[in-house]
Length: 377
Image (cartoon, rainbow, N blue to C red):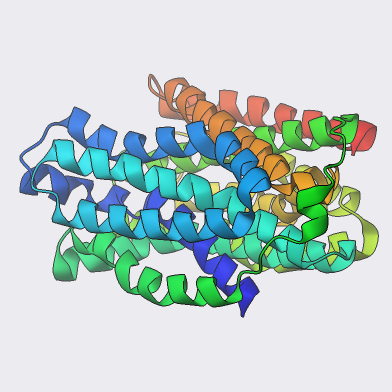
């Protein structure tokens, strides 16, 4: 039950990255704002989340991950209420920034509690796989759930839907999340950063650089190049997102049995094949042309995510789990945001030629990650 509760935490954090996108047109009309205002609704959350992950991870190691998780749930819930009640764009952006604070507490906090809870490396790897799968499940859920809520109840429901989940989750977390063990509080291991920790985080950053960048350009390809509606485009991205959610626990089990290098190798090789698939897209291509790209990316990241997170966290002592999680998630979020910017700029002039360029860049970076895996992890 505790693992399920921690998965709810990561699900909420990841869901609010994507669920708001489909609500932006309604927010623009409802609050009479500009395109810049819409962008800040997304950016306010993402910037705060990425900027505070490292601090919140370190804070959990100092004061206890139980306090961080409970505080994160409370802040996230109150900020969600503020978003749903906002009467102008300034209040909405401010509430989204506070929501990012709650998310920054939850993301490393939930992973650190898993590290404390599962002492055995194999059990921990399986638990991290389930946790990663729950986070991945939020990616396809965001556009679909957001579209249904906006159509039926309006844009405020996108934020208010968090409240009943928090109302149930917070009392459960109070009962179930254990206090830090005294050995962790009294004796802190000397911190030594090795090649395995650096390598795992470099690969995590490369994964999100290519992964999130590719998700963006595929969305643009479907909606702008092929002129498909947002909800249809969301459905067409399921071949990418579904393997991510399904393979998280599978990757965790493989990691538990064989170590992280095997699933990371499989994931990086599949990712390289998927990115290379962009080279086959032509001006007159349809949706079928990008399905191999989606499958390669989804299967690759599905194998890779849980393994690379476990590799990063396991490379530091258990009493530094918050710091390890904070560094890993900061690398993923910050480098992923850079990937979105680079990939978006590359296709801004011409979609198809830009996709070809990104096919070479993406497959090359996956291969760099593959070499790093065998050298460092």
